[in-house]
Length: 83
Image 1 (cartoon, rainbow, N blue to C red):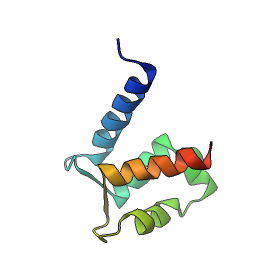
Image 2 (tube, rainbow, N blue to C red):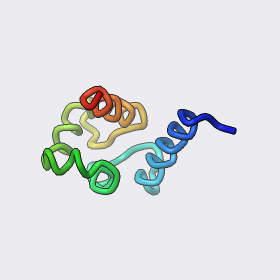
Image 3 (cartoon, rainbow, N blue to C red):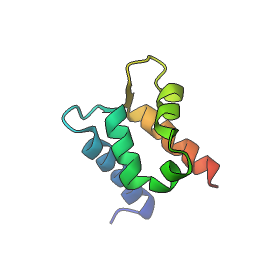
């Protein structure tokens, strides 16, 4: 039986791929906004410009997409800010 942490990790992976859509390796700006509206709405309500700020901070290659590593960095920032 998977541990609570293992279940949480699997959930994060599944969620990333659900919102990434056809291109399951990245989240576009639109996909990130949709994910945040549905799954992180409290953060988005506090700062409506959060998606643009996140893309600017994490999308260092300026491809206007976030890969899974960048997505994890985003989640780590939220976790640290709310610890």
